[in-house]
Image 1: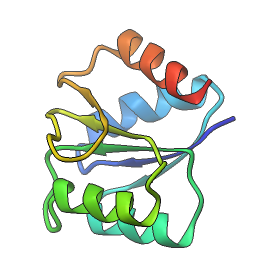
Image 2: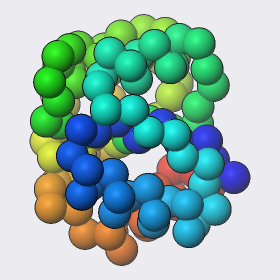
Image 3: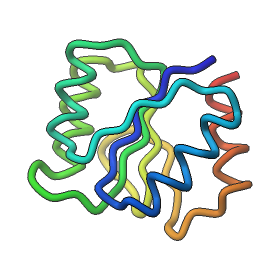
Length: 109
């Protein structure tokens, strides 16, 4: 089982990915804001971060930079865009759930 932190304020995306990930046997925790994701990573332990590109408050780019500083080896899946300066797996929106499931499986294996 992989412990995953899912960060998105898009309720439709959260419902879709949360259900898919739980069905695959992963332990999923959700937060709405990138600042909360940073806080969770600093005080918790995760195997994977999934972060949406459309936040409010702290930008996702800044949040990912901070997370990578705290946990440099932590895999990050960036939904709905691409990050140029930080190593991450980028997934286009709308998310193809079967493709997403294969990508998560390849990371968690």
